[in-house]
Image (tube, rainbow, N blue to C red; front, top):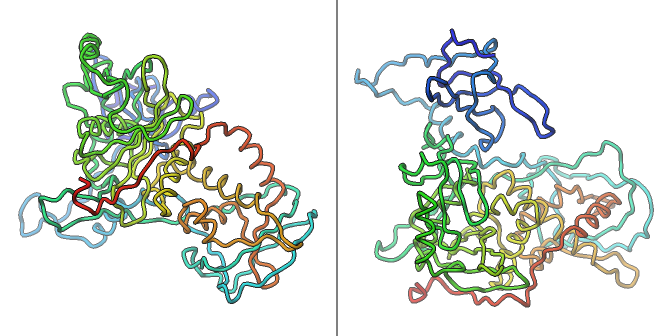
Length: 497
């Protein structure tokens, strides 16, 4: 549908033909990010507005709807500061806008819906167990409707009420969640000492047209070929290759199949470097120190950046530990996914980056990685939370894991002496090692917190119980704490480095 008499330039917007999830044609609005000419035929790199960047692609002119072409708006000329070209006077509005853009990814979740604060232990009252009955759930009655989510106290006793409530047609779950600002720890310590903290949150203020476009067409990793979703800073000379070859054991990148075959004759690795700290069946986890195995860690970060848009790449991997999950067969230990964490986190982060490689997604490995990160936190005697912001897929995985873990505890509670089971937010957090704020946001997301007769109760409705039971039947992969051989280190001691 493209009219060749009209020049389509970078920044133009127009509808572009694409197939949706059910293989139907649709014409979403897209922005032209780049134009290239191959043997006299033009190709356009488009970003679909309001779609994730991993769907960006090169398209041919026949997929463009030129009738609805929108040309880029010209920026209004502003007076030069001191009459010097290239210098513009400072604008508070522009500064605020830049700051908002740099933190925009932190708002992956909708703003928290105000809920009433939980009562303190002095206010908590005991109540008898209600027998299983069919009626509608109680609504939340708030004493202060404008009280934010973060003000929920965690020392109050919350009673569990197992109502069998029939599913209500058209009922929607309450969206919930907080927005944590990206924090990047800066240290003014002695330069010679290795850094123990760091952040992998991407600073979006440095985005440019180059990093907005995928630069690798295809990656061959073992028996899999992967199509990258995002930009990754591999060397420039490799970006023109049709296929980038990676050694699946040391993750070294090579420019041709012949180079890979020659490398494999010399590469002695058949598993990630580092200590194997978990093995059950064919699943193993290896702990890799970012300082001791710098080359492997950097190669892992380069590969992960192809599928993580919201994280940046640190060549300084010293402050991080990498936990790589593998699947074993006769040829060796094949990487499935990984997560990284700071050696010492001031924000209680137990995960910095987390990724399941695309060939292994939707098979339960993501939840297994998350569960393993919390098992490590249990051994360390800490509560933990993932570094924010989470990607869209990461948020879905964590929400699902938190929901299943908390519901598992609530449904296993037994009533004593005919009274309703009692549990506190603190107790849930201690049992699961999930941070209190994440417990509270999950309870609200599931719409479990209700206020009745002067106390807070958690009401498990029939559809919640049935949905949880169905989900747990599908969840075959679980971490067995008995198979974990892990001793936490005190990284504050210089000798551990």
